Length: 296
Image (cartoon, rainbow, N blue to C red):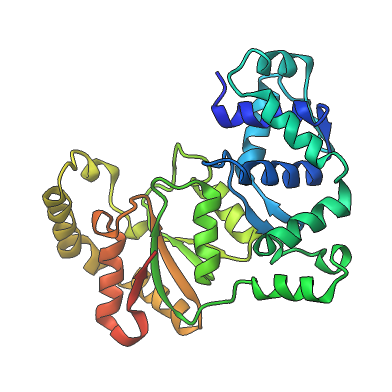
């Protein structure tokens, strides 16, 4: 079974002729999804501009299903892939019109078009000077570059977010260290298990650290239905567990003392339904002026 976003990906690739280079396809997929009310894919600013980790995760799945060729140099439909999408629900005419409007754009011209229209996504590019010859256009990209935040503490949850939306929040906040405070850093949601999250963060210049001793065992997190349930859990955590973690708390303080902008992360969207707010408050108590937390 295909997700709707995967059908969109395959339908666009079919409209583009069934075979496109990786850089071109990322840019075309980006432009195509900017016209959707709810974009099928989100992107981050990367070394060649806009990039979707999620689209590559889908590419791997589609290769496993025999719908794309296993080709590192091309996004290429198989005959099975073409047959599958033509039975699907995505309107191919939308993709065909998009292809007609962008048929002449490939290579550096396509990259430059994206950089001009969406300079934020060019802000980490290694080829800006190569593809943008106009000084004012390069200056506009430079203005969109995210800057390292002042030393401090933030918290963020990934509930309800795709990996790229989450990473953009970190980049725009100027986070330099992501501190994972989950006991078991595993997730059924793509991008948020430890290995994948670490790789994505570090590819964007954000250091990933994991302090599992600050987590709460999963068996203690069951049957949490009301805020009162959460409050009772956190009361016990702050009383019995957190006071024992002086070394982990000192480690976070040392990062901030060294000038890092540290974000504590876990699953829940709202900080008061997540133990990360307890960790933040413990750090604030030690030095309120330095460690007053911002919740993203």
